[in-house]
Amino acid sequence: MSPASQVRITHIGGPTTLIEVGGWRLLTDPTFDPPGRRYAFGWGTSSTKLTGPAIPAGQLGRIDAVLLTHDHHGDNLDTLGRTLLPDADTVLTTVSGAERLGGGAQGLAPWATTILSAPGRPTIEITATPCRHGPPLSRPIVGDVTGFALQWNGQRHGVLWISGDTVLFAGLRTVAERLHIGTAILHLGGVRFPITGPLRYSMTGRKAVELCQAIRPHTVIPVHYEGWRHFRQPRHAVERAFTNTAADIKRSLHWLDTGIATNITT
Image (cartoon, rainbow, N blue to C red):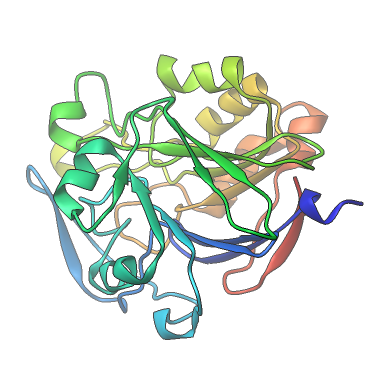
């Protein structure tokens, strides 16, 4: 098996994962604050962090690139997470997020692509994918979010895709049309807030199954479904949704223990 087909993924907590492939060390959505703090998300919404990171920020080591789905919500980029950004060689995020962050952060519009390259490492092509972090017409309130698709030579099953915080909508379905997904890291949790009632701001297990029926990934890794008060669908609800579906989709579901590095064939 080619070393380039192997990727090592460590779920640190919430949306934060460390992705290691071919000498690259990529970090998604850095969240390293301790639990207990309440964060305001705007327009009367807020949440409290219930669980701290499995690995402290100071023990991460070198980070080559940060893949930041959005900068303006504390459950995707918090105070300690921000301190890591200046030390990363590359920070990729939304166009509006890059403007807010400054410091050389690079903004990618949906379907824009950039390249990570270095001597002795595989070249990684990173493509921004569409997200909508809430119901129709909510973008002016919830702000811009992006997903990321990572492709390099030697992948056996397809690209590695990070969905970002999003509901299932037409733009997300274009991912199935334009990309062959091998590993899907899906942000779930079925987020709701009391002030907005039944409206959802991230995918439920049922919607994740519906998405997987379209993209047919080899491996599905759920993240960002617990550790905060605003999540409404914990692990058992996601498992129940995947139980009643096609066998290949059911087999694709793969849970990562936080803090434990796991090798995945991409």
